[in-house]
Image 1 (cartoon, each protein chain N blue to C red):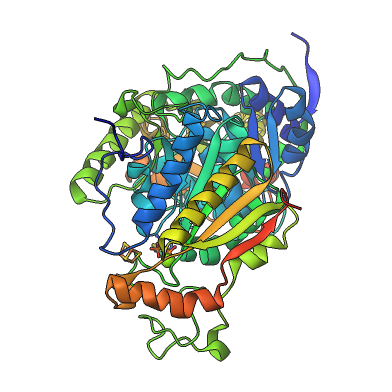
Image 2: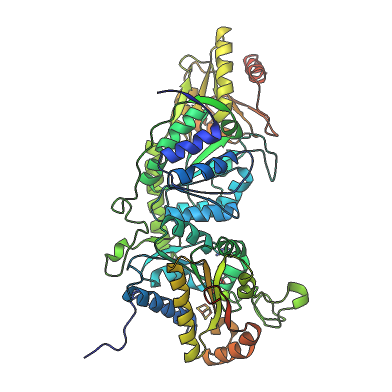
Length: 252
Length: 359
Ligand SMILES: Cc1ncc(C[n+]2csc(CCOP(=O)(O)OP(=O)(O)O)c2C)c(N)n1
Ligand code: SF4
Ligand SMILES: [Mg+2]
């Protein structure tokens, strides 16, 4: 009998705590598979991986990724990753961050990690909401979107239009590769994995800062079923946050 | 060994390098900017890393990242910048990361001024960040003492797995003194000695040894266990790491308590007044956490002691610990300066004479 499918080595056997239909689980799997493949292809020595978990629903990612891991303060993952990478330059270092973490409290840290051309990869999971704290407005919350702190819908005149981090960061000279993806279809899942793997490969080649933004659902706090949430993402998030490569210095 | 004349900030930076620090993350702020400046030139010479962070918040989190690999890491700042670091310091304490943090204190609150001060005693010793934690905190009173403490600071940080804080007033960093610089220590990360660090764990290795640098313990049981572990470490540090200096206290009728540079000014007062026949002495805590309560009590509550004078460049912060040590057994007076002005010997002398006259 041959094995056709198995748990990636880069994930522990700890059961995810994510809600049913949440995309965090899929994205974890893609990150782990990409790293695993690089190890299997002989491009990365097993053990030369360090990940940094954020504060957000993925705060326990240190329990799921089967490698040396950090749990950083809210928004500070890029600074933690900077310290880790500078101390062990030969390792693959990634951060995994939500939109509150990266686009609100941690904007300084992400902008300057990009600005320094820090040789790290950031996986940015944008679900347009603060999942962990129970569904408050994020900087990425869409105009009109109701959350527990925008009960009448996000009002652009009052608190601005949602921030597009990938577009913004691609203007930073130190950013090497930035792509926005989604995991709403099989094709998009494969594309996301390809993008993540490419970002890791760039890091191994010593290129600059890479970020893969992944649009993600939060059925629980959006108040939708997993299927409805996917549809909402397709109809509302993708039009505002267009998928695709925002910057790729390697392809220029 | 030959003495060299060095500026405090540069001497402290060089001592850190000699003690094995190979990573420095910081952000400019007066009166400690000479430390990052020195590090930026020196680190490349020893194969180390100097990185100017975008803020003190980022700097302390870079410390968290680098210290998590087992490396010897240091950051420095001055009061407003150290305030920004508090979140990260609490995380380092929670994650039990050894590292060294320098606070070259200036006047506060807020932006205050850029002159030397001792206004961050509470912040350093009583908390600063959230949660039940302590830092091994030293208050050097000379450049040489700062160097000597630096030479064991990383060993202590690693032994107890807790951050070490230097509470140095701006004068220590700014003055030049002849110093003896110790030899370079040969430090290399030894994964056997730091099994908690991120040193290259791979799937298939002992799961217990995977590096997980973390301060979250989500349920009450595990957080209780974690905090109990921290408290055990703190109890051990309290038992073993208290440092103080008694200066001419054996027969002293008035004992002055002071830390850092103020204690040096007091020493001059003690000598001057002794020459005039007054029995005055100095008790100087060197470790302000753990605070030498018992030693202070023993010295200050000796039968011949008539009164205690606490002198600080703040409104009486260490004074609270002095009071806790004395517990009302002897009268305690306070002389403090605000606006980060240091007291003169004449001022301290006048205050002691006032006490003698029972004012
Ligand atoms: C300094 C600080 N401020 C606030 C919080 C509370 N908090 C925890 S998670 C979170 C938002 C997380 O949202 P996001 O980054 O979008 O992640 P998600 O849960 O949606 O995946 C907030 C505000 C905190 N832990 N620390
Ligand atoms: S609250 Fe939202 S983001 Fe968090 S696990 Fe549940 S679905 Fe996912
Ligand atoms: Mg979110």
